[in-house]
Length: 273
Length: 189
Ligand SMILES: C[S@@+](CC[C@H](N)C(=O)[O-])C[C@H]1O[C@@H](n2cnc3c(N)ncnc32)[C@H](O)[C@@H]1O
Image 1 (cartoon, chains in turn green, brown):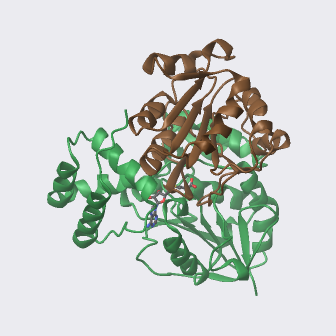
Image 2: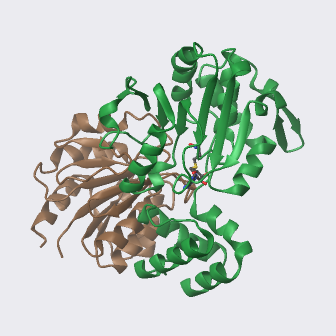
Image 3: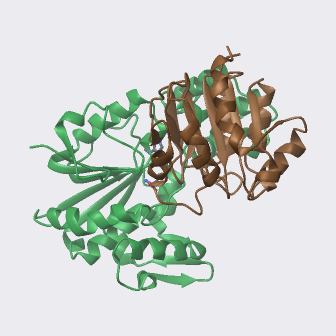
């Protein structure tokens, strides 16, 4: 049974500690999910009580990385939601091709699968030579993994199906070299990606982009924090630039909705002029 | 002990049962209905549309931070767990599968028990998976109302059977009794 050993007040205390000691502010994360994660970390790391978890977090700074990793959900895929990538491939990226240089921000990139997918698309529409992908995440350990470009071989079946469903026509395995149970993606792809840590809660805008992807990250934030992050994106997006969200996320009801136009039913919004 | 939300969980063999329940639900139910289905056999995002064609009330696919309204049905989207942020606000979570499932029935049932305490009703339908049983136990612990499809009527009886084993005195419902059972909860105040 999933334990439910955590009380709301205790969560607030822990979040205050983490913020004061380490500068990570999770106070505006969606409570429902946060509570599940905290319960889960107690079970997986065998803390008998919430107090034990709190003690460990406060007194062992080397545990923080693990804590952040468990609190933030890192599940990701290449070409997740193939129809979304199809839209990028056929309409959005070709439009961006008219710019002399294309800057794309993948915010909350997790272990990099999304960024590599975009890099493959850019190659296939012949724009890679003049494009740069900035892929960022709060969590340094996923960024380290992402920058290696090494993924488990067993995931390639799903990824290659996704790739084909997104309109890809090449042999997907031509993009990587298999070594035992892992694959390494071509360096031609990672050359177009700059991986770096960036915290959407506390860090500011660092460039101006024509396309920002932030998919399946905002579901973990409450509405106020979502709006704060939306203005960060707004300030980082060129006029007529595009903002892409996850399959179940929306700009509707947000502070930006009046100035952004949704592209048909896709989770892509264009900033107005 | 009023009902503030009613949950329906199902897996293999439960879509036809839902198509039987939905036309007979009262349009003015004073609580929302939240449906969690394993979607392996039906991954399209059009499932809510199919369900709605037969339903007396609207069936919506839940999105991030969807606000719940009484008398409407909300379907968990494929590939996300569905949680309650508050009594009126849904939240989605794309984390690990639970019981090999995402959405997982247990996850939503447990979240509902946490938020609604004893003001939850839940029904577990046909399926070949163990998902939902823990969730029912949580709801029961919080003194909510629980019921299952009579395993004898289930296309795949494993799931309700497991629930029956865990909760021997749980209420068994025939498919044609389910809508009435749910409708009557509005008098339960
Ligand atoms: C579920 S993953 C989504 C990965 C990918 N975008 C996708 O859709 O497949 C969510 C990611 O958001 C990151 N994240 C959570 N909070 C963040 C924050 N405050 N700033 C930046 N990234 C954050 C997590 O570390 C995690 O890698």
